[in-house]
Image (cartoon, rainbow, N blue to C red; front, side):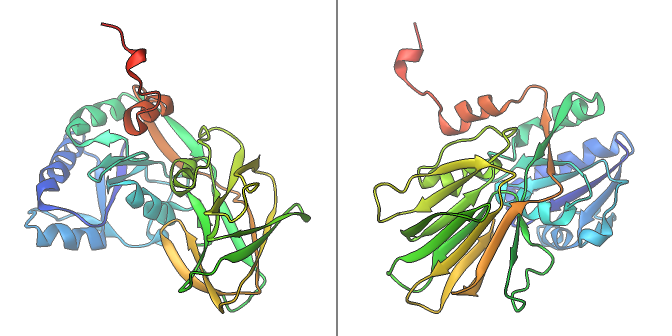
Length: 298
């Protein structure tokens, strides 16, 4: 490990020590460090000293010479970091200073041991599938970030009325979801918004996406797991003029009567998993999977 990037967003003064621990342990191995420019501003306002490091600001400032990108924050920080690495194959490792931390699995007190594990190459790299979106409306601009690591969500806007989402799989009509919206999630996103809407949990290495309706007004509308090679086309109808379209945490307002096409992107986002961590272990720890007093004996 010779060169790393560090990315963060909102930050609390109580977390300052963990950034300093990360920097201290990277410096022990003479690792070149670049810090996101806006994160430097946040750290400076918190009184962090000796921030004399090179900075980066956008995707174009990164390249294949980076061994990995650290994030300090929660899962949302990793989702935003994915928009920086895009197709550069730079793996991401999240240090959890947020709440749940399903993607950001390194706990704050484990930073020193984590650096040791990275130096010893005691980790694997998981390739997480990404959803890519396009539209037949030339006026809609996704600012070159037309993909989502977690999910693409369609939701009603400024109305209590349901919207209709016509869904086509490989050009075959599936159904029209009359609901508050529709979540199309990757395996990574299956533990996010889709799960809150009673969607299934999908193992990260599964080659699937899931369509999960939001509060459907139809008892037969159930989440549907599909192969990730499927082309998904969505047409939205309703009484209002616009609806919300979100790609992970990036929300935009889109007019009705347009067609959206969702496909698997031609690149994955790479997530580092330390050898002592597993997805199943994270399920048990974070979501209390199988929590039942009958599972424990005295």
